Every structure is written in C-alpha cells, then in structure tokens.
Image 1 (cartoon, rainbow, N blue to C red):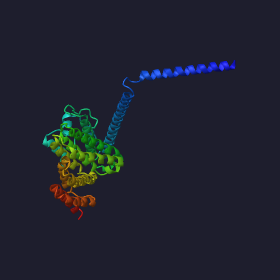
Image 2: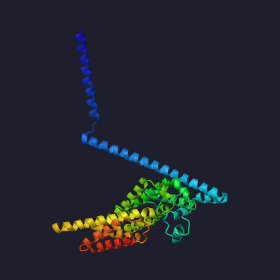
Image 3: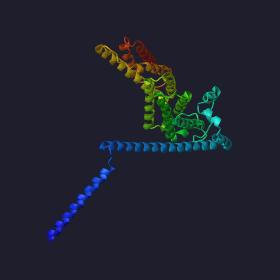
Image 4: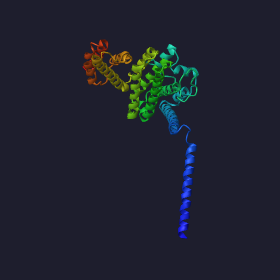
Length: 376
C-alpha cells in the first residue's frame, strides 16, 4: 500500500514537472522576438542604452539645477556682504542693479551685440565687467539661438561676470566657494567647446564674438586671487581635457568653414592663455602636439625611402601653423616655468626635417628659440 502511494506521488511530481517545463517553454516562445535571439539581444541592448542615456540626461539636469542654486546662494551671500560693508544705501543700489531685467541690457551683455561702444564698456580696462543681473533671469532672448548650449553658455558667463562685479574689493570671499566657481568655469568652457564640436561637423559658427568673450571671462575669472584654492584635481583635469579637445579640433578640421573656425578657435585659445592658471598647461599641450607631429613627419620620411611615396597627414600639417602662431604669441609673456626639455626637443627634431619640410622645421627652431630665450 505504501509502495503504491509513493508511486502515485512520484507520478504526480513528474507530471507537475513536465507541465511546469511546458509552461516555461510556452512563455519563452511567447516573449521571444520573431527575428530570433540575435534580434532580441539587439533590442534589449538598445533599450538599455536608451535607459542609460535617460539616466545620464537626468543626472546632468539635476547637476545643472544644483549648480544654479549654488550660484544664486553665492551671489546672495556676496550681496549681503556688500550691504553690510558698504552701508544700507549702497547695498540697496546694488540690489536694484541685481534685479534689473532690461532685455536690451541682457542683449548687450550676451556678447552678441555688435555695437563697438557697448563692447568697449563691457571689456574696457576701467569699466565694470557688466551690469549685474542674476544668472537665473528668465528674460534671456533665445529667439536667435541655434543650439541649446548657447543658453548654458550665456547663463554661466553671466554668473561669472556678476561674481566678478560683486567680489571686487573682497577677494577672500571667493575662497570658500571656489568649487562653485570652478564648476561654472568648466561648464562654460564645455559650452564653448560644444559649439566648436558642431562646427567641426559642418554646422555654421554663429556669434563668434560671443565665444571669444566667453573665453575672456574664463581667463579673467581664473586670474582672480583665491580662485585656485577651490580647484580640485578633477576640475583641472577637465579643463586640461577640454584644452586638448580644442587643440585637436584646431588640427583636424577640414570642412569648408575651416578658415573662419580656425581663426575664432585660435583667438579663444589665446584668450584662455591669458590666465596664468591655464597658460603653462596650454603651452605644454601645444608643444607636445608639435613634437608629436614632427615625429610623425620623420617616420613618414623614413618610410617613404622604402615605399617611395609619402603618407603625410596634410590637413594636420597645414593646421599646425595655427599652433605655431599661438606659441609665438604665448612666448611674448613668459612669466611662468616652461619645461626646458620641451624647447630642446623642438630644436632637436627641427633639424632632421629641414630638407623635407623646411618651413615646418624653421618654425620649430624659431619657437624653441623664443622659449629658451625666456630662461636666459
């Protein structure tokens, strides 16, 4: 009796197992795509990629919101400090300036106004940096903007100029909030680079003067006392990466708009080099690119003797003279330590190229001489 009961139990278990496996098989068949496992894997990978992009976009949006709030808090603290130091009358005057919402004023401040007198007023040596307007103002005129990055560029540029106006005479107040300043600098510089990324793929370069003004604001901000104390390794690494990308865009652009883009990009890099914080790193990066290109040209010469044909990257070669132009201008104000080994490398690699690439070799020798002269 017991054996019969055990046999019935085993039979029931076996039947339930078969039914379960059949149910699982049917479920798998129903959810499987008609195109097979490969199509299913590709579809799943695409959904995961879209989900990841959505998370990244959300995280970026939250980071921008947090940075905006921190910018507002910093400006508010500086405003109240001004009010307490300069008296209620002067504080009310500053508060009135901060609450201005004149669209024409914002238009002139955006850097897109071509009126010479307004630009002179903003960037003149004795003139204020700008009429002080909060960075979260909703009165920006975005009708003429072609990219979303323009709004970010204007927003961060205006914050840094507001900060410059409010912090005059109280440099030490920047030190505790240097992280906010550097975050804003990185975001502004990334917005500038994004415009050049778009131009690199053939998009028109709108408002080039705005880009130049933005890099001037970055250089001016980083030149102020106390800013370096808030700089982390991550911040400076990001700035370094953006400088590398700008140089790479300068060397590799071959679109029809390359001439105008090269001019604006060179001016922006030169403006960034006006800051002692950026200048030394920029010079090192520019020299490294020239040394690397010189090595490539020499390797090409060596291979051409065997294969009897040249494989020169002529686009990079032609654009390298913009790099020489930048180095020549940066060498006129050598108040920083430049690695002497770089200058020696330029001279060493210049002479072997004299026969095949005489102009390139001459420029290398000239730049090396300019920087070596700065050490004597």
